[in-house]
Amino acid sequence: MLIGVIADDFTGASDIAVTLSKGIPGEGGLKTTLYLGTPDCKAADGVEAGVIALKSRSIPAAEAVSQSLAAARWLLAQGCKQIVFKYCSTFDSTAQGNIGPVAEALAALVDERAVPVCPAFPSMGRTVYQGHLFVHDRLLNESGMEHHPLTPMKDADIRRVLQSQSISKSGHIAWQTVSKGAAAVREALNHAYANGDTLTVIDALDDEDLIAIGAACSDAKLLTGGSGIAIGLPHNFIKRGEAAGSIGGVPHIDGPEAILVGSCSSTTLRQISEHAKSHPVMMVSVDDVMTSKVSSAELVSFIRANEGKSPLVFTSGDKADVARAQSEYGREKVSATLDELFGKTALELVNRGIRRLVVGGGETSGAVVSALNLGELKIGNEIDTGVPALVSPGDKPIALALKSGNFGGCDFFAKAVDSLRGK
Image (cartoon, rainbow, N blue to C red):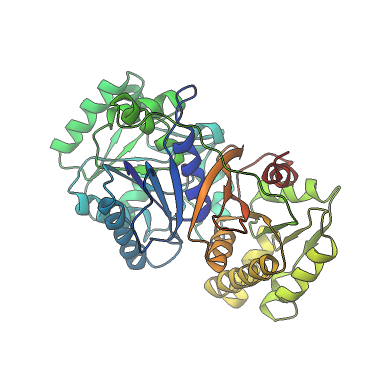
């Protein structure tokens, strides 16, 4: 294994897995496997990039650090030469963490300084300029992320957010340096290393900037960022002859399908509205879930009654409803109860023969794959930017698409169902 990734949620893990699998256009990427949690056995032969999906974004910082260190030690034991800590391209975190504490702990583990911090993902409209994170033409704290139910982002200055979470000193490499290419970035990182900076925020406006950063970090033991940070990394190993460059692909799966959505992002709400124009959709009230008026049985019944019609179930009330429910019942309790609902629903659906699952929302995706206990997944074709088809091993494989709340086009859900079938 050449590259090991620790992702702080399941959708982010599939996102960076497809990035590593694709590599640079025309060259191919690395043979990539996605692990749902840290494995307890050796990786299979031939895996060039291993991505461990954790559900550590919103748990206490100390737990996130412990889980991430365990994942890193397993990856290093598989021979990984480079570790990547992957978090959301909107830097989802709180003043307490978990990005800063995990990044610092990993840096200490591998004895590295001047570790890159770059959440940029230009193809999804996330860019970093003068240390500030933008979502399209809006600062992060004006993009809607300031209303996120678990990790509201109130500050677009990544340097300031990172400093509030971190103990050690951090630095910054401006776009004016990045635009000069890999050699300039490498020189700036060397300066940051000599200056004693543990973490270094790096600007990036397009994929060429990310490729330059990747080239500058060809020998780095640790990088952190959104999935964009991985765009140029396979090339380094291919260039050195340590990998040949491969094109990912797995068999498509036919059979009944279901769509489960737990995100309340504006992007997801638009996608649900579009899907409802020609497919059965069931909205579940958060209040009804919290008061046990609705359970997984009702969700399963609706999906089975609409088999073959791409039925969708969601709890994505508007942001005001979500905030009110969190205030009344408690944020952690609402999150845990919804996770349990979707996990039980997914498990029951699969036991009843569902073979294709499309899941919207990072927390919901984590709940679903945890309940299914699939172990590892193969990376298939990219359905939409950052969202690959995933297939479990075994005699009765399951095809999945795990979508972050803000990812995908307006018709994503129907497109994903067809893609998992092979249309």
